[in-house]
Image (cartoon, rainbow, N blue to C red; front, top):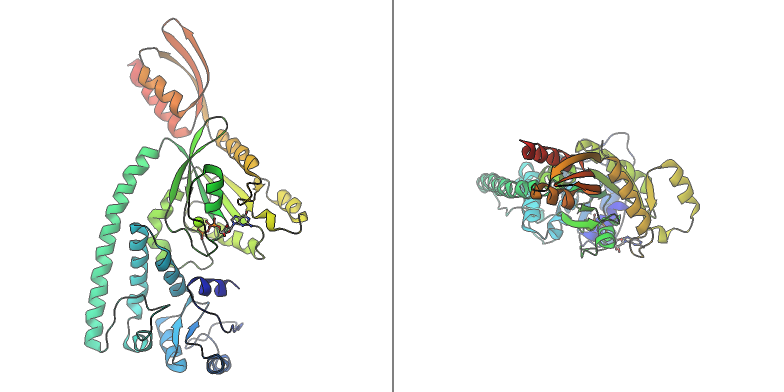
Length: 396
Ligand SMILES: Nc1nc2c(ncn2[C@@H]2O[C@H](COP(=O)(O)OP(=O)(O)OP(=O)(O)O)[C@@H](O)[C@H]2O)c(=O)[nH]1
Ligand SMILES: [Mg+2]
């Protein structure tokens, strides 16, 4: 079960799992009274000290559950926030996670809620420092708001620097790896580029974006972007805080959707990822579906079926390198479809333009007549436009 995997990633030891299907969640306690009694009994029997809910709880529900169970209560969002906090490595990711945490905690800073959660370390206690009493609470709230303002300002500054870097990169075609967490995005990046991106069998191993140059067989250079993975019910605060990281993805010309085809719920995960891409407003891009981890499949018949249902797809095993050639040639194919081609007459004196064309475009033919060259080339739309502008400058 996914929640179990998340809880374990956060360092919890899962002693019992309870399920309830309700037409609508109970307003006061999410679960119904009968299930609540069962929960209390399970807590007694297993000596659990933490209860994690797969739903998101309102501050009121959290308070009620805390009073009724006298145990720490953690909901899905705060659990994911906690994992992000543990895994954030870069300064930016740390700021982004802290901002999301502060915004999550602010409406939940109540005396009752902090009463128990203050006592032990561990999951759900990584929020702001809290103290007892209403006055203290006001002081805390003010401190949290101040911190939120500070974090926003810091992140704005980083965002500006990122903008500058993005401008430098704008003449490259970009391919972004997207997909459910743990699908193998970072492993694929390593397979394709010999990069040393952090890979681990845990959820949300990657929290920032890594960019590497990928050189394809026609010596075309593209940028490959690896970034944070998606999950069902990704907390909204997180999506908002990570927007600038995700913007790298929004910039991409092609999306490589990595799917762990050995996961029993991979079809659902595909739907979740497509949904989030839609929410981020980046669903219209050329999309290559990469069915990864095929080495773990017992039934290869599934692949034939998938190949029919997903015409633009490849099958890979990032750990063994299987499918690498097919993936590269598929990428090349898609990239060349989005390219524009043209022919220009360029004087030999326009050395800057010629150098630029050789570096950023694919020059397919060059014919010299005296001191001018007729250059036939193809390039990404951005590069094509830049070349045309430069050529106009040369003629004038
Ligand atoms: N058997 C097998 N394992 C794989 C394959 N690709 C990746 N893995 C493993 O799956 C786990 C997750 O891989 P990552 O590359 O970290 O996945 P990710 O999509 O970057 O995950 P997040 O960064 O957490 O979103 C690691 O233990 C990898 O070794 C594969 O093709 N076959
Ligand atoms: Mg990763």
